Length: 238
Length: 260
Image 1 (cartoon, rainbow over the protein chains, first blue to last red):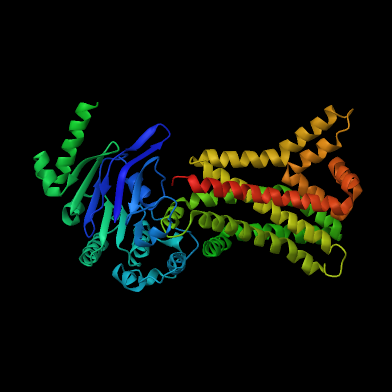
Image 2: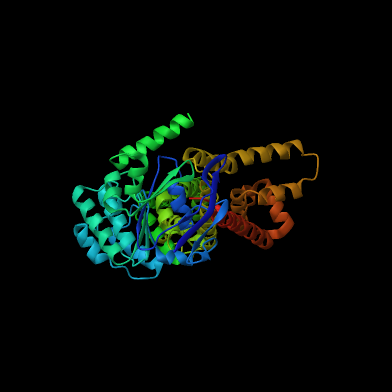
């Protein structure tokens, strides 16, 4: 599984990740939360090898991921923004990702699940934002990976697609898959996440279940608990 | 790499701009050929268009394509595939699709006109070759500039400045230098300066091929006298190859370290 040790990342003078440890629990859904700019996306991208940390170590199954690309075979990634080559069709894009990964994906059932049957021959530039996000989901889930990393998976989805996504995640979890996701939709976190990791200014501020977080902050829902943490933080470091 | 190349190529070749680019060369070639009725003249006129337009289009496509595929690159980078294959594939995809538009757009009018059997076929081939070289060189340079600059406006501006410099400013500076130093033997300097500008190199290559001394200009004449036509062309070809490889080397080096 994924282990993070003392990870540090700077962009110029801006310290985004300030050296923390984190291990991703297998078979669980971990939500990474935090205000804008707290380092969520940087953390995810470091795990994927898109961002190269300045310090610390990330390992997958005990092997360091630096200068290694093979381990990505075990990761399914859903990027935050779904933008693809404009003149390719949905079908061609799926074929492209299959060729790049060198394995056949199970796209047919996902295409049906997200009602994309009529869009397969459409060029990607003709698709709406929500439809592109569904294509994005197909690309991520069509491969059988032990870990899925989802960056804002719900963006642009209509309520039906959202329910189908939640069902999909739950089904996959039952098969023992591990999830790491970021989102600003607290109801989604309350509903599906087993673990919360709350990042604040490049460090892990809280780690535990959502019930533990509510108890710690003495609040009735996550949104309020988080708002309270942020207000406290703001009062200490104005 | 070939997989990325294939899709990047298909994506671009279907874009409206590739077709417009093709049509531009096709129409220009037709008009020049049928109006002048002289293959050599048409080639020289086309050369003048090519040497401005090809680097410009390579520059614009290189920058735009990189910035437009920024999010898609992230998706590709998260796949089990080494970084260099992604960027090499993308770069070659742009270069090849532009080269195809250029090749067909320029060659077809000559084919219709009946170039086969004419002695000018070698000159046309040289023009096509330099056009393809310039496409790859400027695509490579602008792709690298886009890779280095997160800020799109800055990247775009810098790439255009490089094109402007190599297309126009460089020649002016060159001429000024030759004028200032006209009392001294400056052949070596002239050769050196020509090697440092791929557009000049391409021009020299074609002039040596056409063997029109009146059009050679100073550097062409120097090349001609120093190396003769054969060696002169070989040297320009070698220098153009170096110009093609260097940006790719920089792209690979930068892509290895970059955060996305």
